[in-house]
Length: 411
Image (cartoon, rainbow, N blue to C red; front, side, top):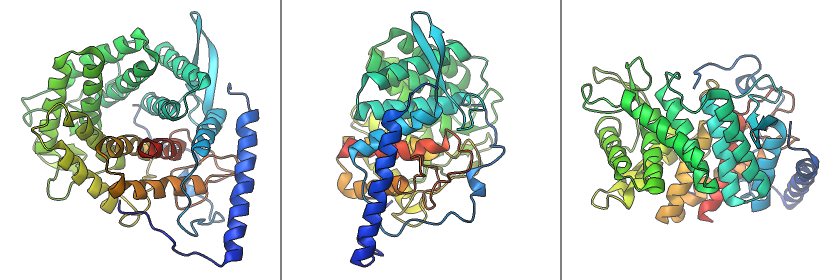
């Protein structure tokens, strides 16, 4: 993830004008769609049916040059378009309403538990950039939908990372709405997860990925640090801060490579590493470093976070400092760049490192927006124009929305 590439592959003046006119016309169409539409409307499994991996060969690569950084108004449009396609308000919830995001634009059912939380977090990101009553209400109604669909305590979900993702959504929503029910749901589920997942008898610590207790993964440990720190900020209960550091100390010892900055994905009881880095695990580790910095100044979390950012910029892209990898393997991986964008951009904002990383993140935001389809959706394959004919799932289409909105944190 290096500096933004500038002035490459520029064409003659006439071609530049044509490209500008094309983008302007496309944005105008999207703005009309966004403003005229009515906004109603972890299981660990692979995607079935049409997927982005089977993109038509007739779709061409549209990256002629470094795409311009999207305007703030375009980031707003991206979120509105997403809601137009996937948001479904389906009834009342006491004196309020309830909603969920469809799993795809064919409206074949609600998103899976953990990906639903990430879609709601994408909306939270958009609200933080462009606050509105509409977005605020949708956050509340989607939270009500989680309560309605899954209850208030998720102990029947064997995946500890799912519980953490849900708790993290709740505590972030609470920071916006001040809804005590969201705080309680975040606390109760985090506490339940901690009690069954934290184990020092194997590998000296760490949270188990699921209740089978056969692997300890970054995808539960890193977001748990973030969630614990946000709970500490909300409640003042220092036990959450202590838990966060315990987890982080264990990750640094077992899963972090201090030489390269890579954060490994998983380790099994005999000490064997079984997964390498992915954008969401690298990103949440970076977010964990960010939140721990001020509370533990004697530890160089800034340096650790920078090292992890350097690795992402150099090794998790199509080329060093280029476009983030597609991660298009299955339905659990296709939206991971949205999570990376959230926490990497917050790190850059809070640490004042836009001079080092901002250009590269801007490059990705511009590239994501440049490959939108005719309705304004962006899939996770940022080197290829998004299909107008394939069924697009709601998780893969969070990536560009998250990158566009979160990049404004450091602008």
